[in-house]
Image 1 (tube, rainbow, N blue to C red):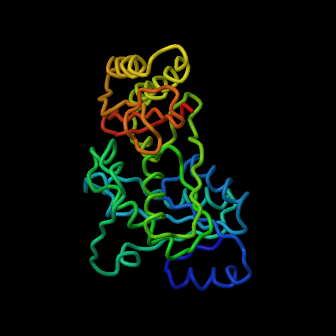
Image 2 (cartoon, rainbow, N blue to C red; image 1 turned 90 degrees about the horizontal axis):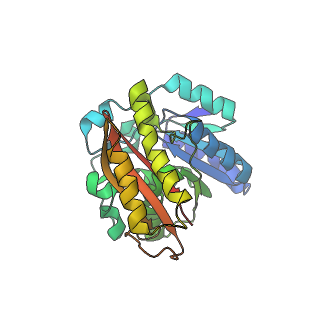
Length: 279
């Protein structure tokens, strides 16, 4: 496994592979890797000849500087995880490498940018698409793999790809969960044992909705899920909603073709998100 720190070195490494028409996959991460990230590497290995994993904690997508400061950075652990997963190249640029000079970034991501996470973290998806475009420019991948847990993020990246007419296929991969149902997240490291127990209400509420989807109206399911979460100590609900998976607008028609239940809440001091596809 090669570790590369500059865009120039990365391009030099990948150029002969591109000339040989080998398929290149990119798995963008901010580090603090867990089994969810490892599953992305595994899926990428099945569909590409070479897998590049980037580790970069991107400052432009953090709306809270304290959140940026406390974001976990267990680099040695991450490198070991990637070696064991069979990753080919790790791209670990500095902030100066990715942002050599001040720049502005504002693209039209559609109305969905301002809903759900966009409402709670204003400007977040501009920062996400800004860095993902830079990574796409550096790697020029054929495929890029993202986790379904960040459902809205995948949608925004697809909008960015459409905006620039990029030739990269976006692959959304299933959520990987702990044995108790909690969606794996780099932020879970901040949960106390009690927080972890309380956080299980998020996946339980989603399971409840899925299990009762055929027998109850959407409005009733949303109301009951919110009641479940609000009754859990130490959990402050930001939203629970069932939406059209393309527009992120609330949906009440159970026969709509693409329905997703999404939830976000603060558990103790840690904000968590989760979702479940209903169709």
